[in-house]
Image (tube, rainbow, N blue to C red; front, top):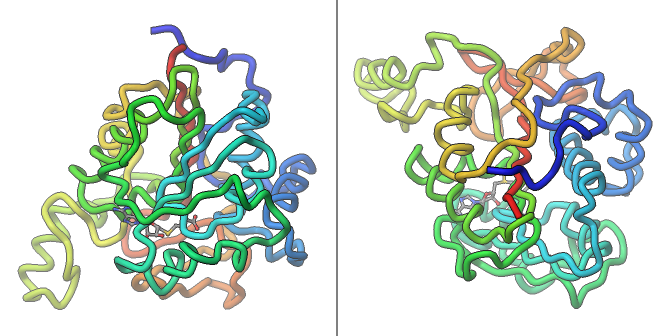
Length: 299
Ligand SMILES: C[S@@+](CC[C@H](N)C(=O)[O-])C[C@H]1O[C@@H](n2cnc3c(N)ncnc32)[C@H](O)[C@@H]1O
């Protein structure tokens, strides 16, 4: 199956984990600032979420996807800044999410995004080119091959168990046009650790009558994270597409500074007490961070 782009010609490793030294690259920092805009202190910019945005911007630019006639779908988009950045560069952006429903309804998926996206825009944007819809990522209401770009940032891991994740990956691939770009960012555990093993966590749940690991199943661990092998099995393979580069799971020692302890959803304790840098998290098992996956559909 011929690849839609020549990955050997890419100027950097994109398919990788978030790493603190990535922020040292002036081109990376410039793209990050262009996307998030709002005058953050340089130290505050050292966060995984902004890394995802900068990587998306750099990648789409490098592969020539930022064309005035291109159409993009943002899956589980919340009110993320890349929507507004992208819509100023291409023909149309459709953002879908469970807006107003689900466990993120009070946060990223606030229903007001449906009626007033402008309230979330960090800068002026081409308002007529952004449409925001309530839609389940497991059932995308678009015909096959509708978009040149499909992307989903830090979301697929929250869609449910492996079956739901596989289904969403298949859906995103289905609506992508030939020669199109699929970008999925998710959470990747750095190494294998026995305490991250879902069946073991399930035994702990049963033994503690659900006091510990309350929502764990034999196939779904307590944190919404994947091993590199699970990323391949549950996300990459179901798309039927190829990563443009192999996933590089190496992370430098600098990234361990301020390792953030995950206590529960939204409950984070950074080692230094300072929120930034925010690169690696850890619960009981291995640390994890964001993984950038870029896939291409053959022409
Ligand atoms: C951590 S937030 C990320 C939001 C956004 N992509 C960002 O980077 O700010 C995860 C998002 O996934 C959405 N989500 C969860 N399950 C979904 C589903 N089945 N279909 C569509 N969106 C879903 C949530 O509503 C939430 O907005």
